[in-house]
Every structure is written in C-alpha cells, then in structure tokens.
Length: 298
Image 1: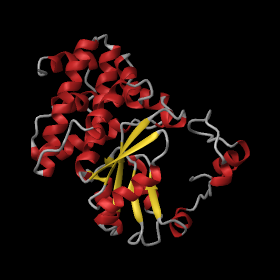
Image 2: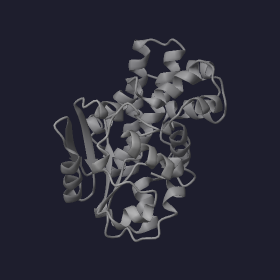
Image 3: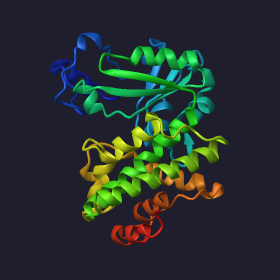
C-alpha cells in the first residue's frame, strides 16, 4: 500500500480504510509495505492491481529486476497514450519474459469474493504452467479457476467490457428498457469479437465466461462502477462531476480513448465504442448520441 498511514489504520482496525471497509482481514497473515522494491525483493509472484492511469507512475519507482518474477496483471485497462496492454508494457519496460506473464479475468467482482459468493476466475498465460500455478494459488472453495492461453483476447475484452458497462449505465438512466439493453450487449459482444480477431489474427472463444461472462456481469451488476459511472452521465452529470463523485476509478473512461486510438489504423467497426468516445471526450449529449446509436445496432 502506497501510504504508511493507510497501513497503520489497516493494522489497527483489521479493515482496509479505503475499499470494502466492511470486510474484516486477518492482518497477521498480511505483510504490509509501502516500498514497492521491498515487496519485489521478498516475492516470487507479483500481482499488479493498480488502476491503469497510474501503472506507469507506480512502476517507475521499481529499481529491481523483474526478469525472474512471475507477474500477474489484474488491471482492466491499457497504458494511456501508449495504447498497449499491461502485459505488453511489462514485457517491454521491464523485460519480463512472456512465459512469466499472466492475466486475471472475470467474471468476478471483489465485493462478491469478499462475501464468499461462488465466483469464477479465468487465468490467461502463454505458458500453461504459469497459468496453472496462478490458478491453483487463487482457487478456493468459493473461487473456481479456469486457464486460457489467449492473453491478448482476455486483456482486450477486459478493457472493452468496461466501455460497454458505461453505455449500459447511460441507457438505464435514459430509461431504455431491458429489451434494448439485450440488443446493446449483443452488439457489444460482436464488437469485442471483431476487435480481438483483428488483433489476434484468429477468432477467440468469445462465448467463454472470461469474455461473455465478464461482459454480462460488468454491464448488469449493481457492483459495477463503470455502470454506475454511466448511470450518472445519463442522469446529467458531466464527466468531471461523475469522476469526482465516485470513490473508485471507472476504467472504461480511459479504456474508451485507448481502444478508439488503437482502432484508428485498424478501422474495425465499433459503433458503441465510438458513441462512448463522443460522449466522454467530445462532450456530446448522451441523449442524442444514444438515439443515433440505436439506428446502428442490429
């Protein structure tokens, strides 16, 4: 944890002062540190769970080699401005071998994990042994783990599902019903399929839970902060006001620009992503943009 005062409060109360405050932790089993290099030195496996806009800022403090570490990304975003996935960034910036990299995909909300509700995680890595190692470590009686070798597909899908959750939230506040939401999400899944296929050069199994399941839970769940962000925009909040109101990062805001920019040369048909870009970055009216979007969906 970055702030020592947050660590001190965590140790005193047994609860995270910033997130999921109602959940008690056994702090005797947690080794806290505010020094990222100390954490790296004492760990074999590193899980990066930093909001994407701050990944570079946090990792720029790293002075130790990551080449022999297993590094797992739980980030549902890309590196802003560079428009590359987190695993690509870790490979390029810190020379982490691809075989040592893995990603965690859903469908899974932290709140339900904390409540010990049955959840499923998909662990992706080009190295089956790495995927299985991480999957076995994260498995629990209420957490089932699945492995995959489609790292790029899982990462891009994890970024894009947040964009569609913002769209779902906007449409909910604009009083579009369940019938339209079903069409919206169906088209969103098709967009993911087109974009991932264009990037991978081959189709991904988009109906697997790590893709479709993650899209559904992010778009429909009351725990989805991207959906909540979208609902606020649909209620008339400005982007800045909605961001200030929320206590956590809505990754879909940053993901929208990354996917839009990455798609400038690829020119994959992504009407929902473009609609969200118009609302979030061109500051166009959600009401008008969604009205126009309804004419493009099938």
